[in-house]
Picture 1: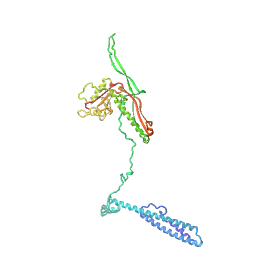
Picture 2: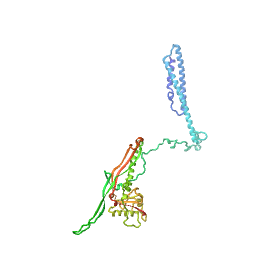
Picture 3: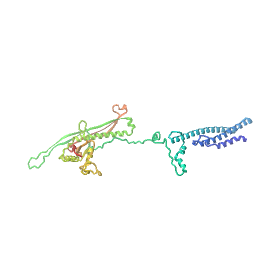
Picture 4: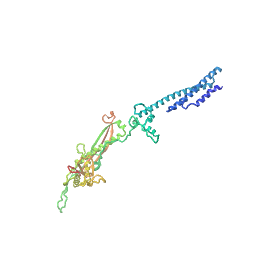
Length: 440
């Protein structure tokens, strides 16, 4: 009876004493010494289990001879011992494989460190050899290892932001704002009176003759006759328009594209409108602009050593003599800069206080700068009295696929247009000229 229980007792004792990493997956040990110890311990347990398996087999053979059969408990113990034997054998093989990998990896690391220390040439030395052979360390040891020694070894294959280092891990930031081209500030429309119309033309009467013979008369005498005349004028509504082709895919996939196109098309209308308001020649579908209607500059008198500032003052005088006191001036930005930089004989600015500029002004009138005006040219006048803009249709942007073969090509035509009329009712209120050869 005692012999029958011995295998069971031995099995329980062995399983209680088994190494932690023997059954199941071998732990990720990185120290070869630890793995070697584990392998040794596992081999010892395996030897004891194999001994118990042998004893159990002998006991089973004896029972079979004595009784013709083996007990259930003996069979159970034999199965457990065989299972443990297999598990221990598998674990031992895993430990051996793991030990081989760790030793290979450690060997590679030592070679890499030695390779860095020697610049990749000659015999491979470990990091410890490099330290031991360093002259700084030798001198430190020779002096009794007192104080502190600093050791600097060359670094090879450092991780940097350049590929194949960490460069592949660095991602640039992306700005969602679209950087567009510069846009001109529109100024001419704001100078004029503005209205609206529901028709395709504006008709108005303009006085062209005024002969005033009013004067004192004696009793019973014939009174003097004055003469007045008007004529009918027409300002036709004109259309300013343009369009652009865009694929449906681009319009749908680029969320900001629709807004950008809308803004660009509207800006194009305003830019064309600015040019038409100022210089439209009235032919074809052009507006009849301010400058073609303006009165030519003619100085009331000559000024010795005339400057640009003098010329503008004489233009203001001309408008005043026509009974239309000017309320503004239009200049090219370069001309206005030349005027602002005018200095006296002691290099003091004539009228500008560079620290306290309230706004572009000259002779008490606002100055409007625009590149729609040619350089060396000016326009002075009573703009509110001179002309009126009549808007028939505000700027409109419309998209449609019903244009030529757009449907079959998945294209969209985006059109922008506006309709307006310009009536220059008092041409004498505008004075246009150039600076010629006058100084700044």
